[in-house]
Length: 269
Ligand SMILES: C[S@@+](CC[C@H](N)C(=O)[O-])C[C@H]1O[C@@H](n2cnc3c(N)ncnc32)[C@H](O)[C@@H]1O
Image 1: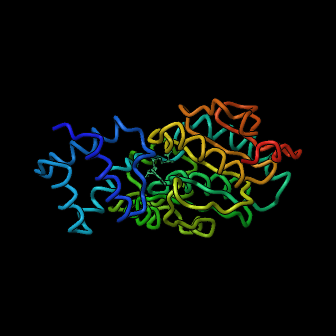
Image 2: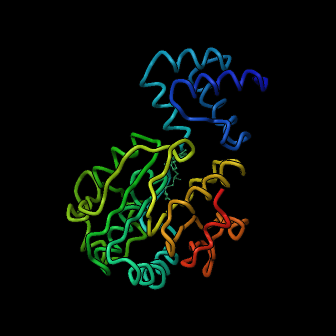
């Protein structure tokens, strides 16, 4: 079945009215393929029929949203970047503020936020705060439990694994002491207003779903949300091509810094 653009728009508008999430900002080929395969798996013949099914059950709507937002993650994903973060980025940030305000944007079930909590607690303990946000509520509920599977923790070095995780029949349970750094809450990166004053924002493997316009707007909003000297840490396939136009400086791949000198006025938009 190949719905027309008009039919897709009707579906997206209905979805946005109900959930607030605007699917027009997602990469369309990938998104539409995924929706059609979900539609087929539920035996719906048209988008209209599929929407009627989804709209009549909160549970089915949740299922759809969760499936849409693929939330694969693991602790210390791309370990070499975490070493750079620990050895080069965090010391620089801590030279400026003793207490870091950090945000894992698109945190899924929390692996990234816990990786940061472990890094800070082990090497730079203090009263740092880490906010984790995602649109996927099921993933956030999991993040709040702090329980991970074997695959999630395969990149955690042995000494950190021994120190911060307890193996139980339910999985690897993170040390409750890490909770003092962590807060998780729902947030839509495409629709919400952002808080400001962040020292560090991690947004990794999230924008792969977004179209170029959405990505550009998001990076500009992150720039505004950072303190001067603050750093945006992106995923290992997510170079920001117009980073200089936005105002960032990049001294290491995948870390973008808001300059300390006031360049921000030139790029405020
Ligand atoms: C592949 S996971 C990345 C998790 C983690 N950052 C990492 O790199 O391992 C992508 C996450 O982005 C979230 N996401 C997608 N669109 C979003 C949006 N508009 N606002 C907030 N989160 C979103 C998804 O729900 C999913 O949990």
